[in-house]
Image (cartoon, rainbow over all chains, first blue to last red; front, side, top):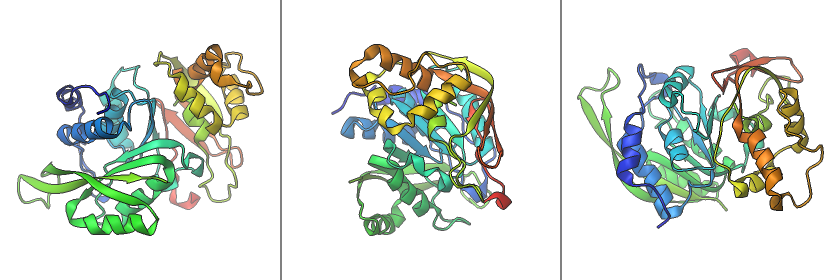
Amino acid sequence: MFPCMKLRVLEELLQDVTDFTKPKINLEQYVTPPHLASHMLYTIQTQYGDIKDKSIADLGSGCGALTIGAAVLEAAFVIGFEIDPDAIDIYLDNIGDEDMLNADVICCDVRSIPSRFDKFFDTVIMNPPFGTKHNQGIDMQFLTRAFELSRGAVYSLHKTSTRKHVLKTAKLQGVVGEVIAELRYDLPASYKFHKKSSVDINVDLFRFEMN
Amino acid sequence: MKLLTHNMLTSKCMKGVNIGYPLKIKAVDLKESEVDFNPDFISRIIPKLDWNVLVSAASSIGKNENLPEDLLPEYEKNTEFLKRVHHVLLEVDVVNGELICPESGRKFPINNGIPNMILNEDEV
């Protein structure tokens, strides 16, 4: 076990992170709920020690749950990359006047992150778009870019139903991945096409080790 | 936006731009804050930086902290030096201003510390 603050404390801190007010379907904006974000980060730190004192990228950082969580867990430095300025505005509200936060967010397309950043980060964390709606394949584009950016490990959430596809995509690039946790995404009905009031989606937390 | 982030950013994605580095900084508002000093991290990050770009970027916004033109030998043992680099890299924030592409002159706004590098469709 690597040192880490208590899971309950982390989850409480992340409870205060506000979600998307008007999620954009074309960007597949689903929040990373505090429960999911805190479990993900807690597992990454306690089991692998991949957050504290590390340089971290959060791809598709949205409203900042993972960026803020990683900074709270004493990452050496975090950079969030997010394409949507409205999501970044919510992130800015979330951090408020918190000067101590050791993080930057860059407004850019994850697919055009400069190559100077290749192998710059010790750890990449992300809750990428699932690549389902109008966005087919975007999840694998995020994953591929993450492999280039990280020199240590990549942690990523994917629908359990796509597990084989994720592992195959990684293997094609010579990267070995494993599922280190199975989580449940209790997704509030954010969009009109969700008929139920909330939808449970099974998701895998993957860990990929870079060579 | 911290100078560590600036050191890594380019505008190479733009159509017609070859290197797009380093981006010029026009700083309107700066902020300085205190961040935990982690000497191991600073030592590890220095080799990944373009040192000359860091020194000139820091000078251009008046926050040079007497950084030497050439990187000191055995800097990882020099705590006083690492602290100065730490300050320049992580404790100085460009809150509002612009980044300017050295080739095309395209301006990328920085608002509330967030550089906006999004390009229009006709620029990629």
